[in-house]
Length: 548
Image (cartoon, helix red, strand yellow):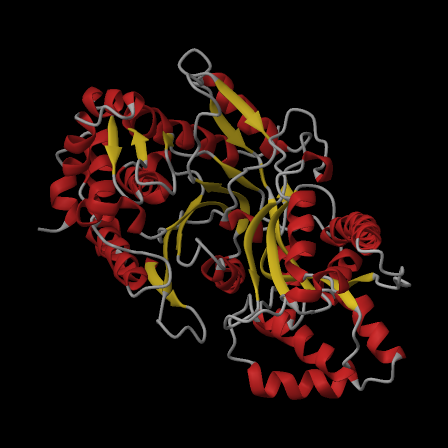
């Protein structure tokens, strides 16, 4: 039976729950063929709506260019005759994996079986209470963010059934590949530009329904965001001075340098921006490994690591420079500490002191290239040759491999740390508090202040596709960023000009729940399926109106 035939006799909340359950039942783990399956499922739901049966050309898909899996975005347009003002409802369709469910892996997509399990799960009283209440829907993607997809689809259906309330255009956009490289959102910019020209659209605002969560135990506030935090993957190539473990004081262990950098940066609030009343988060280490591929008694010569580093207002290049200066200072302390330990060791054995000339050079990537040029290395030719042989490497690995390749050409014995960037890069953006969209959002929340406790925040903290709809960094800042991003134009080409030209204000008015990216993921039905769709329509109606 077609989806609409099931939906037409249901209340709105029942519709959203039914669509959510259907979407959750489709395994759509990022980087698998399931991403195609979920796009087809969303397309099928849309095509079951009477409006799109009558206007089938207003539902379509966009295949990602050069995608080996053939993944695709899904679009649907409700066009009001003569209207230009357009509201985008956007959401992503992929999920993280299901291995974290352990023995419940086979039930990860079955909301009812998970609810039954958690009713008896006394190890976590909070989730047990939620399961017993009947107010929560469980399952991978239930919160992040198939319930958000369902809200957008149901609101699209609502307006198709109530055309008298349609005073502008609505564009639904379901994106793939959000959970790692955001390739779907990036590709969608071409489609947004095409539609803008074809139908003379003006994009007033994009409404993302990505999830929101409590910030502390008992927190009932609903956080509404009028911007998106950015993200840089800040990478560190660390080369030490290898030595035999029987002469350990003579070297510089790259794993020791990496450990110092990890202690310096990981979760350190000293490196965050200070923005009053915002959730400004520190960097987190996402990978740290040495490059030894078998056991021996030589200390590790090379170690690699990278961090998730959030951005809010500061340009990425400034953040990279700040990190470089801190690492440089810490490496000087490390070398002094190594020298003192070696001197004490030699003294304890009545051995003569040695002249210790060890140092650790610290570069950004562009500074390292300049250093190689000065040493007579033909950098451009080498980079070209490397690309020809290694362009199929993982996007996160290729920068490390390039630096390793270049360093072997100079073949010096200097210990060094080289900072650079790798994919993904999510730009930060936000809406000015004196803009009409901000004021309309504020007015919308005021309409519901007796019903819910809302709090407006500037930056959505969890990373989202909204990052690609506008960009706050200027051309000079972007140029400085790309100088430190090996092969940026080839492995992660971002259409900065297009993002700047579209400049679509984005807000997150999301579903509410707990446990995103964990096996305890769940969405709160009374708010997400009851209050939220009406709240979004209220804001939509205000956004369609001309500024007063």
